[in-house]
Image (cartoon, rainbow, N blue to C red):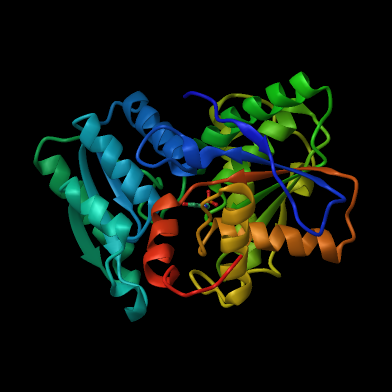
Length: 324
Ligand SMILES: *Cc1c(COP(=O)(O)O)cnc(C)c1O
């Protein structure tokens, strides 16, 4: 995986911190994003496990399903996507839905309560067709493969430490949006292995219960260390920090403060941020720095991508005559 650049951001108002951004939105496949690294980790793990078909789970708006369906198509890997039904408002097709559609990925719909049975059924169907299927989340309850997704950002962390070495200093804080926690758990692994000073802060973007989010990140870190046969540092859970004060109404819910952040960061830094993940986290980071009166620090924000969602936002809200 080619590395991505770390850029210094222009800031307005708060000049007291130096803010840098790692442009993982520019990873050169399927419009980029953290899911490019994570999808790659899944495909490698699938092959290592001797499997030849991938079962995805996610919403039809999901960046992960976009990138994985794209990667499977490119590699001629059979791929089935299990799609659970969530709230009605979720029903409108988005850019990701269309792009997933282009790959012709077989989709199996199910209710939230029937996921385990559906995973079983799809697995059996694929076996009957002669495939050796691989479910990205592990067992029928979606557990047991947390270490694979964590691997992506444990490895990406080396790009951060290489940058720090070049600069001759280390970041004080690294912020990232935290959804499933795969990205954050990987960053924590990378940080534990590097032994650098950075404090990693995940900004929660959904209403997922904080204890559950914490547990999943902990499993990701454990899974990665077990998978790679390395000794897990004691007290590693001290490194798991989740900020839950910026999720507004929950997943996909946002207000004018997020809208303003998207316009401002576009105007100031030429950056595409989306209202569901990156703008919510970027805004949350700025709020946190202000509330905690943090100044004189070097801060890294991980841009996790979601560029098709920026264009969804633009199509829906871009016509409003608002200035930066
Ligand atoms: C999936 C996603 C996230 C969240 O990453 P997790 O590893 O699930 O926590 C953040 N930003 C974007 C754009 C994403 O697609």
